[in-house]
Length: 628
Image (cartoon, rainbow, N blue to C red; front, side, top):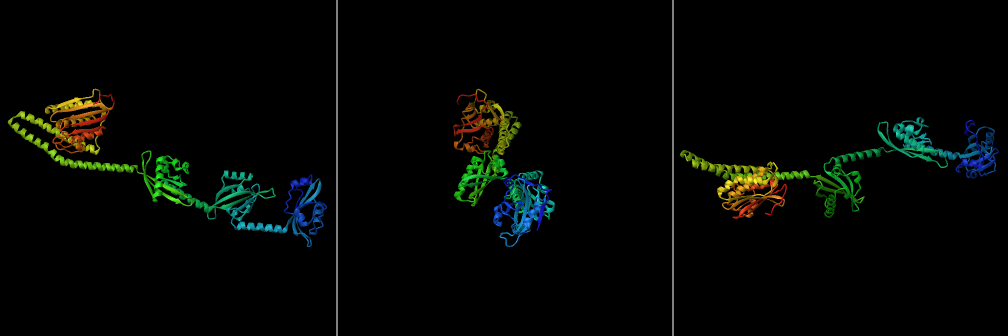
């Protein structure tokens, strides 16, 4: 027999005013037999479990039962003592009609209405043994199952821990027993986390935390700890159970996945092309993801755009092209979609679309790659221009060699002939003839110089090296200057030469020297190739533009060949465009310089009826004029 006694100095007597008051403080579980007896072993209360096992009820005497030790003597002994409670093992002898023979009995002295009574609670030793076996089995399973489990009381003081938890904390049960759980876990928690754990214990809340531990080999182990408050039915006592689940493999795999995601994200974001992803589900297109270059270029907040309809994220024009391309793809069933797109900033993109068919989710995922080819296109255009310029220069060189061999040799042959005649005249002292020859000599040199000037000008224009000094000027001043210079030439040819200028100032923005070169070349051609009749220089303000006309009554040109004759070194029979024996540069230089100066160049001509060249420039301050 085992027993345990509480000394009266440590426990006060329990007094109740009535049995009802006692029942309100004492809850009687029907699981274990319970009775209340007076000092004479008369039963005044029993629960159903007691009545079923002992076949006794209220007002019957309990001492009639034969047991070892004799319970009646024990009650009498306690009655005569000062002990408040006592428990012992009780064995009933054979022949007793009792279902369970062996019990552990708990006796407690109480007072109801100042009268002494005893509360007896019977616990089956067999049931107790089975329970202890279950507990032992549970302990064994927990220890051998390597499941870290820890139990605390209602205040969070540790009352039990499995071996695996001791191993995890690197502390044995003697160290952690009856210590507050927050203090034991403190090395693995921040100050705020510890306070949170204390708050959860105080308020009976669930607490979770993922933390790391080091094993014996210094490897990092990750555990998810979870603290749950436990209430047992029929008891006021509260417990907490802390479990620790090993999530090391999950965490490591997740770290690998995140590392791969970061690496993939880094790779995608370092791709110069613009990338974005959208999916098609139930006929709708939804934005999924993009790289940083795409977001930066189109000013998109990626995280606010995810899962939104694509048409609310990208430009309307691009969305329309994507929809049309997808439709074409579905019809053609081709593996790739490619097209070009120019955005609102005039940037050109080459777009390629590929897709993944997710049959599980019943959706298509499209990956769009946009490569900015604006600079590439500009470079190609520059190459084409450079190639065209090179071809033009080569053409000019060929034409120059073909034409200049004759056009330069002829005037220099004339100069050589004039020089010989002058030598003879000097010998004969014929000074009058010498004066005439000097005038002709100067005229030939002037035309040769003019030819070289035109050649250089054409090559500069074709090479894009012509420099302009734009100023605001009254174009009538240029016309008057050219008229004064060319009047003597017109008088020698006996041609009527007229100047009709706009009454008001006709201001334009242009380069004085280049405009004068254009007018001088056109007037020179008009005078040279007009044998009779008139040449007229005219200016006016027409439709808010300054208009300059140089007209003549000369031999004219074939209308079908006017465009061709504007090219360098191209000549027509009875050539209108010859500069001294005809180099084919007069109209070319005039046309190209006019275009460089921002003007329009038009030629109206008929064979044997004359030619009119019309130059048109924007007027700086239009003042109005009569119609021409």
